[in-house]
Length: 168
Image (cartoon, rainbow, N blue to C red; front, side, top):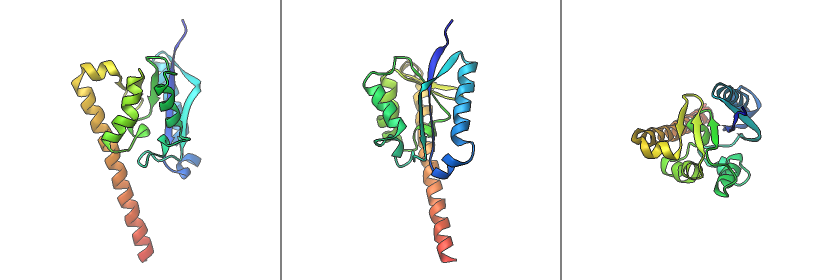
C-alpha cells in the first residue's frame, strides 16, 4: 500500500538562524519523523522553506517567499484536497496580528482543502474540524494571538538592548 503524501513548511526569522543552529534542519527532521510515524511520506518536491524570512513582518508571504508560493498554489487549486501541511508550530506560519493571519494565511489554506498539522503537539486544523469542534477555532486563534504577542515582546526587548548598548 502506498503511503499518503504530506508537504512541509519550515521557516526561521533571521539569517543567522538560517546559517547556524538546528532551525530549518530540525523542523524538516521533525516533519519527516511525524510523517513516518503517521503513515505519510513527505513530498520532497513540494517542500517549502523560508530561511531568514520574518513571519511578524509578513516577509514570508511577500513575493518570492515560499509560503507565498504555497498560498498561490492553494488558491489556484494546484494542491489536492486533503493535502496535509506539516509545520513545527503555528508561529512558523504566522506571527502576524490574528485577523491578518486568519484572513491571509489560515483561511485560504483551509478553504483550499489543506489540513494543517502542527508537529509539536499533533493538532490538526482543517475545514471539517473547525466547523464541528468549536474549541478548535478558539485554540487556533489563541495560538495565533500568542505568536503575535511573542514577536512584540521580542522586538521590545531587542529595542531596549539596542538603546542600552548605544547609551553605554
